[in-house]
Image (cartoon, rainbow over all chains, first blue to last red):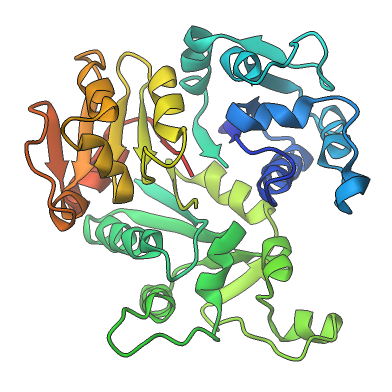
Length: 119
Length: 130
Length: 100
């Protein structure tokens, strides 16, 4: 049985290459049809804000690439409720279909995976 | 146990020394290192262009010696390497860059190598962050 | 199926420790290394937060980092370990989660 990996992404799309490099890990794993999950935590939830304009910063649009995840077979997407609330984000207005989890559910989530990478 | 060790910080970060001591101890304890994987700023550990002061630890050199002396599989993520200017001869030529600087113990490859190793290993341990 | 969480950054610089504490499951463990050992500094909210973790959560610190920083008056529940201990912990717990 394939070992599962949870990728926890904690940075905004604009703070540097972390968001992009977390996504790359997910896409590479998806291409090999591996069981993966992505958790958007802390500033990582800013990747889920709609109508961002990467062009303003002459940057590639990570948020658009996130839309590719289901195509790569990565459909287990989660966001931390606390992180969304702390940052004033409406969990019903996110750019991706994510399951919003409270702290209790998050603890259980991490312990369901064989490996974890937090970027 | 089989370990994959992933490094995300450069040689001058205290993380790289901690990771090396950890890796040495993994082998000393009779465990295996399936692969070492350099990602994000960790790719700089594979740079041949790092010049360390005489009274400082040459972590890039120490890592290279460690990988070679134990014949370990040391992989540098090619996308992360290109982005940060760590290139082998092939990539330097391909992109018309003036220099190749990848230390011989390391090999540029894709993220698939991280996943392949994670599939084979019992434990994935990451070191890094800034 | 418990997780060994690895922290290596100063808890005064950002929210890694705070976020980690919110995500620790009952049988998880926390290993502090690098500047994360500053969370052990007496008289701080961070130290208090560590002391208030449920007793089922094991707290470890890399000894070389504690000694290098001259930290004293450490929590009773803290277990200082060397690299052999670090490797053993990685084997003991089902997975590691390094807060990079």
